[in-house]
Image (cartoon, rainbow, N blue to C red; front, side, top):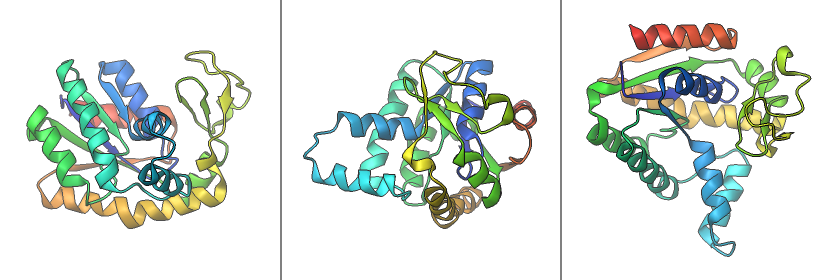
Length: 221
């Protein structure tokens, strides 16, 4: 089984939820890019002009510049390698510009043959529907999907903290993020194919359980 799993998907496809489920089943470390970004924003100097500009871009639904984000990501990858864990990336690489550096770090640490790429597909309408009502927990940012079975939850089932809605999950921001995905991130899939990576496509319109079942089938296959 692969030691690195890269999940590439538009907003609302549930890549964070699926990555958490893979983490629980197989013991991998889920390295979620949004958490990396939020952590570094929180710890940054409030007067840092570059970081403040990047934060504005992020909150507007745009992607960060690779020159700022990639060093943060690679630092976290190296820490996980040191611990000897497998790795799940949900949300990176997000642009062709950041892809070579991220792949180099992964290939040097785990070997190209141990990297699997999964693409979860989702329509724009479903993306807006899901993200428009999505919540996360205040303490650890665990995602709570916008599905009927979670509608009455007020606290996180994993840590008990209150549930909140992110500014990024407003409908107008979601549509912008969906278009950004097709403009900037979808071409990464072509780049990976051209460099010899097999892309395993998953239907993200299905239930959480069915998507996960398809993912496990690909990983075990």
